[in-house]
Length: 210
Image (tube, rainbow, N blue to C red):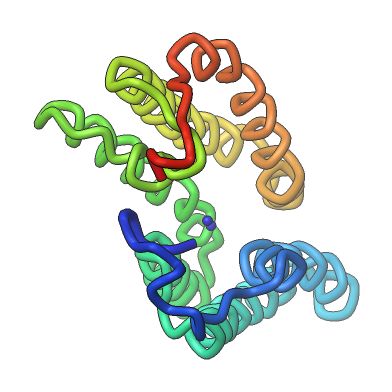
């Protein structure tokens, strides 16, 4: 669920606060780990269906808490965190109200599909929407940014499609295990695979370029 806004120099706001790496990790992955752990604990206590409901409620609550913590410390919330929180809240509420786990399982499909679509849409209008996020730390030429953005778009769409396959073919516990421990390694492998592209299109910078 991901610094300063593009083009903003942190030196312009010396009092700006940021989450520590550990706190950032907790904010981004904490809700998912609570969902995973809460389900398997509650399942033993109240059964599979009620366990799923309880875990979904905890997932929504911790997601909102993470949003509040991010804003309280940094005085801002990344756009995708807002989007993810809204989707988690809506699908979680539907899951709890209708007692249907399919809604919360749709969240990765919706978020990843939307991100892939937005990146492709940006490319269609000549915009690399990945560049503003990484350009300060990853100097590349325009061709490199276009290729990297296109690959990220395909990756997000592939993750959305894979989530649909897993949720339709596997049980809820199996899907939850994949969601918690499968997507992160896949993302890491994807990032490693982009190293040759980033090296080919890397631009050497000097202190005067900053």
